[in-house]
Length: 628
Image 1 (cartoon, one colour):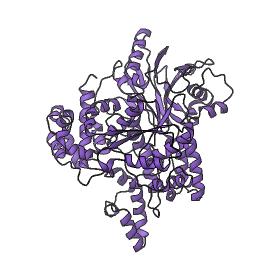
Image 2 (tube, helix red, strand yellow):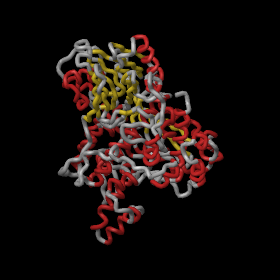
Image 3 (cartoon, rainbow, N blue to C red):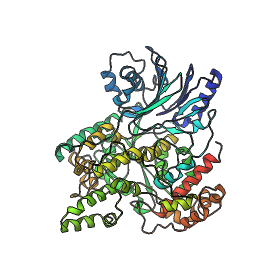
Image 4 (cartoon, one colour):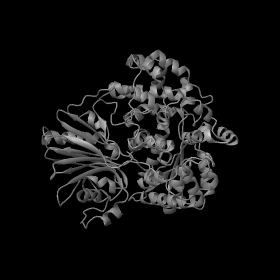
């Protein structure tokens, strides 16, 4: 895991270019504290900082081909590099790692080479013979890359902060995106809240003409659902899932340093750890607990490890509690994540990453399973709503008992299922945004960056909901926070459920194998396969989902215990001073926060709303009023 940055700028000379490259690398040195290097040739410069994980002796980047001088620098891991090396034409390799293989894949396969890569990656390739520079990003946006244009040239980096210091960049907020943030909790699409700084979309490649400076972005892959369902039995699907999942974990254990695993009470990280322990019996497991019982999962973790004692007999379980005092780290987290996201997992994710980084450099994680295999409760509710109109009286009664929130869903508006899904977790409605942001009219939110173009009227609503999650929420919200917070501690996190083979397998399945109303289960095929092949005990595999999040409502309802930086946003003059949000309204929202009747399953609470305000206010202070 590493960081890269650079430019294509003819007006920048060798001395100035070297200084810019060093400065960009230094700013994101936490992504690669082990080594650094720069490559400057012609009008192209590339900086690289390295976290040494694979090929410790010869894997330093940028790597330059001795055949044609093409060069690559990449943040991430190509897990299938061993298989890919054997598939490509014979080549003498100077290194034993993955990135020279990725460079060779480009040399032989051309611009479509990312389709051959199984991994998490964001990188740059400079092809001098073609006068071209390429930025490329993995299918699910696990690894980030940003870019901007100025009068001096084209600049890019793994993070935003290195771009804020390059010639011609002004640190400005794009106010037009505030309604999006306070609706979705993040900024979807290619734009960022930093005016003029963009993120390359997942599964995309950007080609820049290094002579004229023009560039174009194209998508090389899209997660889509076939028009007809696959004819496959539960037993066959369980076997195929097990084979793919086990291999996804296996290849993500490829490393020249120790690999550990996150683990919680949920089935995703538990299953990842279970498969990993087969290959690494002495694996280290890291989990976070809470003093608030309804959020704490350490008991479930302990019970699971005891039930699987033969598999985990040599494993080491390391735990830490996440407490409200740790909210004082919020300004640092906002600065590290760079893009404002209002996500309750921020603090516990940072804590578990810090815990793991004290002992090793690489961990596995269960991220992505809920999006790829329909694991959120809202998928079950939607399936029940689709079934309800044609169900018998007895079945309708069962559906209402199974999903108490179904009555509200059935009595809702008549808007189509896509818009209903998008609106289901919005923090503030249109009229509230007008008051909070001081707008003259209700904002029109652009949903084109959220709804995939491949969806049609015939796409099953469950599949359509999943596609929206994977296109937008997964890369710009879930993966963003995991990447930035893990790399803040120089820790690499690997996500087996985001193996593209598993995603394509899931999309091919009948919906009932993802969400099964008879069993009242989301992520049905995963649960059944885990039970059938002994990955999890049945009682663990059948556990209902318990979202991993901090007790926002509980903590923020006790304002006297909050750090001064947070309390002054909620009750003091900080919001008034910044002049972006309505201070009186913020204080009103703060008084409405209560932990009563709120738990980890609550989709939108007063605590969630006020947390978004805290995150934004801290972001504004850190970036718009800070040293940038």
